[in-house]
Amino acid sequence: MHEHPTGQTASVTEWHAFHAANPDIEAIDAFVIDSCGNTAGKRLPAADAEKLYRDGIMFSASCFVADCRGLGHDAGGLGKSDGDPDGVARPLPGTLCRAPWTHEPTAQVVCHMVDYPAGQSLWFDPRVILAGIEDRCRAAGLHPVVACELEFYLVDPQRGADGRVVPATLPGRPPARRAANLSLEAVEEASGFLRRVNEAAAAQGLPVCGAVAEYGIGQYEVNLRHVADPVLAADHAVLLKRLVKGVARSMGMEATFMAKPFVAQPGSGLHVHVSLVDEQGRNRFGGAGGEALLRHGIAGLQALLFDSFALFAPNFNSQRRYLGLFVPTSRDWANNNRSVAFRIPPGTGEARRIEHRVAGADASPHLTVAAILAGLLHGLSHRLEATVPVDGRASSGGDAEFPGDLMVALDRLERSQLLAQYLPAEYLKIYAESKRGEYLEFIEEVFPREYDFYV
Image 1 (cartoon, rainbow, N blue to C red):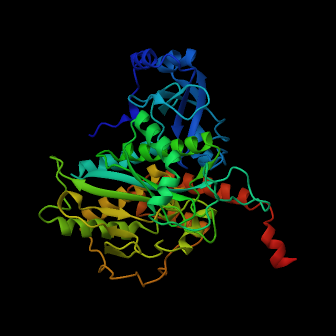
Image 2 (tube, rainbow, N blue to C red):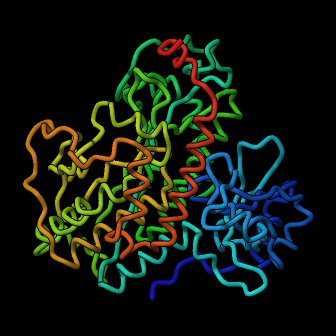
Image 3 (cartoon, helix red, strand yellow):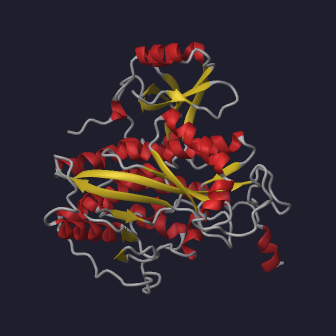
């Protein structure tokens, strides 16, 4: 069985060594990662860090099934019907580092939560969900290598008169008026921000490997290197989002990972690159018989795509992204083609991989990667055959089964007997309940455009 950091606890000696090297630290942020890909926890004074490492800290275990605001909906009876019990969050080894963007010298540490008093891992922790499907892959002889790419916008912290977000004005620059896709000038204009992102990533040990200006005005993408541990790859994505938001805030801006913050601009995606290696670390997609394996994997991703869609597009705004350019609404795949759901980037041998382009930047990296591994395992276990790859721009349009409505996607997720073979059926039900609760509270207020249509 592959060893995951999910159930390990860091020794207090790790804190002692860190504090000796960083005596100025005044506080420590201890947090877990929830089903929205957000961090939830507490900021403690540095004087309490030793207690954190010895005993852990207690806070609501239902935070894992909270909505995007951190509020619960009693999904699965967690958070209200059960009396909202605390769990014990314990620091994970190797995750202690500085948070360079904070106003006061602050450290951060990722935690693993267990129940009290038994000390067992919480089965509805998204990191535990991902670790479970990863273990099944490894038991089947499949060893995933994963990297995430995240797109985001820099926006002004002050909203416009209509309450909408507006692009940020970079320090020393006039407001941007046009898109600058792949523009090095745009990267240079944002160099102060991107340099601080790179510096913070280096301080935190995040494997950032480049940034590009994207299609939208004020939109960027930051890439992460591949790692042979899917849980760690998803952790990297969450920590990068936290870092980008923190650096932007420290510079008088905000970074948003909304899937579609601007109607007339491209949406932001979470693209996941995945390959499979053998016991010696050699890429199985690039070796003998690799093309057949790759097609089996794609076929599994195709089979599970729409059942998993509510994980890739988790909220009302997420659905808007699928109206844009290069955002897939079908099961198509192709070589070196960004108009499809499953792209095979250029490269042979060790570079052979699948790029999963469906999820929005607002999706949980852990649940997204879990669904992708489920698809790969399904396709390779059953030796499924993929469709014929498309040429040029994908022309099949929206698939007849495309769940272009959040409620439809949640219903399909909850009812999926196929997906429940790989991810816990009870978790799919809890996730759907939580997202329905979030949606119902979201639509409680009247939208301004309703007056234009219906008065």
